[in-house]
Amino acid sequence: MPKPEQARLRFMAVFFGANDACLPGSSTDQHVPLNEYKENLRDILKHSSVVAQKPRLILLTPPPVNEYQLDEADLVWGNKDPRRSAEHTKEYADACCQVGAEIGVAVLDVWSIFMTKAGWREGETLIGSKKVARNEVLEKLLVDGQLLVL
Image 1 (cartoon, rainbow, N blue to C red):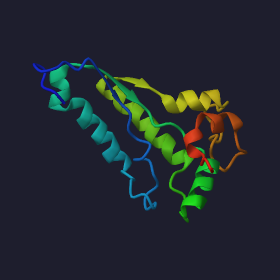
Image 2: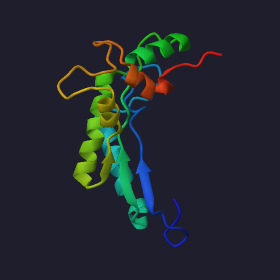
Image 3: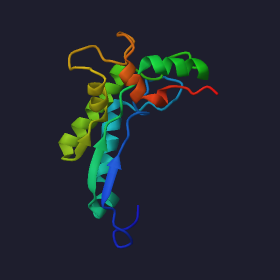
């Protein structure tokens, strides 16, 4: 990051959590424990280089996952165990919102926006979980969970 006298950072978006929310022991080795994830967000937002720049900060939550799409990708990639789950990812989205509220940083809740668009309501089984039927709206929102076969 440039020093304030070299260039001024006016806006900074922090979009972490999708990979951190991988399941513990998954083949990706990307899992970060929830408390460490929250601490990492705090450290980034309070880092001296960021504070010196005085940018407008915004956190973006990790998006939801669709276990059906991920299973298809895992089969092609040879992963025997799931890498992510809808429930686990929600915990990371919630944690991102908590850190934002705690520090006073705006949060764009991508997870909730996508889930609301897909028709999910608080208290219901999570859309994207294999505990409920596939959801076409969520599948269209999460095209990166699909494999394009040429």
